[in-house]
Length: 300
Image (cartoon, rainbow, N blue to C red; front, side, top):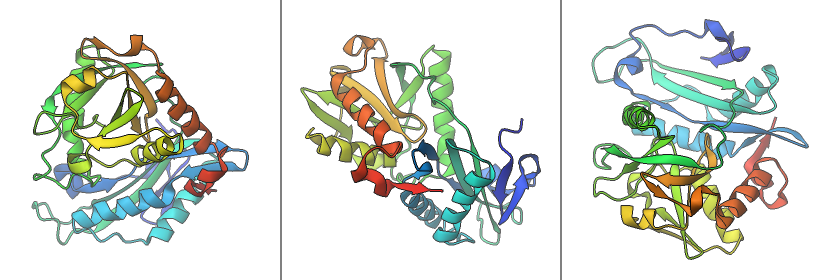
């Protein structure tokens, strides 16, 4: 189903249904692609992309981890993102840049494969259904071991484990899953970072084996501006379940309070005071209502 007019694909703006790949595309078989999830929000000055430069910087970093030479510069990609939003006449949207090894070589080694790249944009609402709080299951699947992958790269193949965890959570009547790391401590969601509040202080897992999300980074900055102490630390399952408040962060999910972890109820399944403060300020920032944070917005 067509959900937007145009997709930028290998330096051409194509009709949505015409952006196609070969069945033997290397990354389709082996997962060696990289991508970003970016959001555009409507502001008084028009549509604005949130933290575009930082997303594109990470896009290039992820590609470098696969020894993938992207065929466009950072500035070219940023300009194409802004142009795509205009062409599709979108005020608010989700943006998905992706680069992948194409169809030339079917061995595991991608050397010799051309690199293809596309950017799509489409309207996308609340990622977890717009609920005040969500139910989260600690997954039987583990977050990828940091010595098996580059944990802070956003590589397509990594998300096979996220699919498994999400399917299992939904089957068990939960809204989302939560990974533990290889030592059995709290890591992150299938596509989200996690924070907990205890005694007025904010805690989030160490960045050793997680994707250091840009929303996570924004929340840390917001908390400091609100004079809320923030600490990155090892968080055990018992510590998480004894928290006063818990919330997910991510480009897709934004700030999503959590009301249940397994069978443990958190804050009577309500949004906590600190979570609400952070969520409220975040919403103002992304909609261009906070002067201090306007540097994060890229207007079309």
